[in-house]
Length: 126
Image 1 (tube, rainbow, N blue to C red):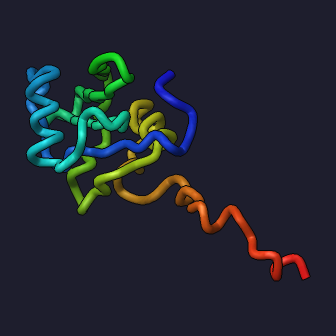
Image 2 (image 1 turned 120 degrees about the vertical axis):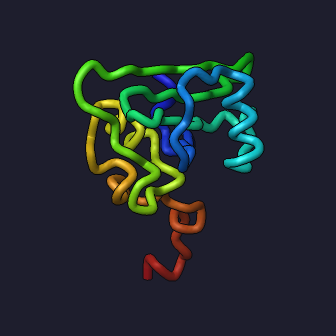
């Protein structure tokens, strides 16, 4: 399990990716095209043109991890079609990897709470 909290962010590459690419080339895509930091602990999702393969790049604190999945039947949702979102939650990633067709097309999780929303002012209790 990669993480079970909402603090884990998943960024999606908005273009089809050549699934022959490995650690260094995917890390370069994160830096140059996605403008992300591969060492941040966030997940970076890449989907092949035929949508049969997907890869996640993740830095666990000691090194880069590359998770890959190839579907035998069906296809992954195309996160780059219909103005797909560039970010999803860990829950949406799990649904994506299970084959949900809605992932990337509409938000499936409520937005994460912000720090200000967690602490109510004293006047809220009167």
